[in-house]
Image (tube, rainbow, N blue to C red; front, top):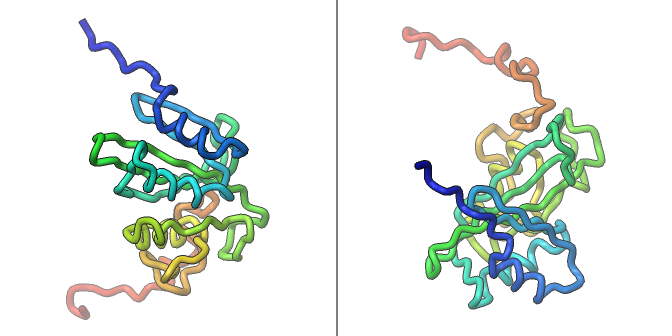
Length: 188
């Protein structure tokens, strides 16, 4: 007999705690395979994250990851093109929780232009370990984080002409490979 799949946990106690703390804010909640996700508006992100860390009922003391997804041409309608995802853990309860904020660009995304719509508040003041993961999101997707202590590229060079994990970036690149000097065994 196959194991019974986990039941949706949309009554996760954190959902109720956040809703009670921020009655005027707009939230969405999802659950997939036992993992609960809270979708917040970008303007509410920092307040909600601080609450999730500081409230004893939540106690998410560890930020496991910050990443992003580009939903360009996604088959289902999404609230924004980019989703910035925060994975939180409460060691006291051994609980994993995801917070997601969606952003929609206001400028074409083919280049490296700074788009005022692609900004979020940095959570490095709450979890200092977010510094490098926010830099990765900036480097790969072009999403900038206000009040970040050192927001610069981390995986590509400073003058790299694009954000390589955006889905409108060509798989072959835009000539970056052709401009490299070929180094063989004898010249290295």
